[in-house]
Image 1 (cartoon, rainbow, N blue to C red):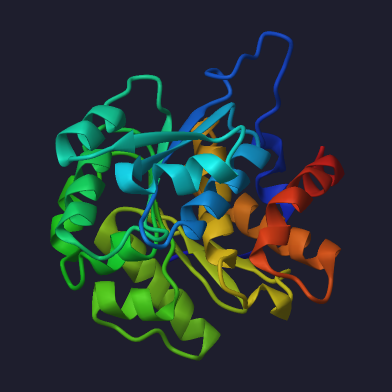
Image 2: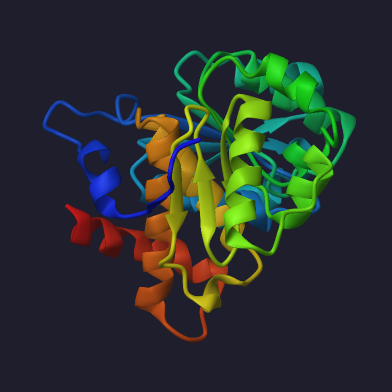
Length: 278
């Protein structure tokens, strides 16, 4: 176990993706997000964050009955409909996709479980959030055996307890140990959300994020964070650094907005944070 480090741009700023004159949308990364129904806002928030942080192409795989909801409210984000698991599997198999996100609004179901496993089997980076975690409640061994590429798990306390069967401590030192143990148990980067978000890598690295204001305790903020991580992974950033960068950008965006923040406000603030960093 390594000593924790305060999360700061010096840890990851040199790895932030930077488009150049040869860039095109696929070179900048293609992020695919699983969209849910009837909860549709979560995936849309995540997709906007992935696009704003630089993914060249962002798409949401959406149940066909929800296509009108997604398509009517998205312009630069593509809504890709499916009506059965085979069609969804075909969307996931698109070779140009460079990172996946599943969980926000997905629903805890057999389909979410199957889709999560299919995404993991592509060998490309995957972010697991919300329902994609709770659908594997206390089945860490099954999840671990299917994680063979960069993977980030982003639980809050309840999801952490459901997945691992351990309630996160209220004491920071113990939470750090628990997050490190979770990273080892899952063979994934684990980002445990909270007032001080903890990011743990499988090699023992730990970053503690201190810049999140209390206003981030609002519905949908976690979906934006998951989208940020996915967008950075899609552009080739390593999983630990992408998670740490996303957590810091997330907190900084909320600070720039100030009081009255809702999750809808966050994606539009990401460019201002990126300008500060670059």
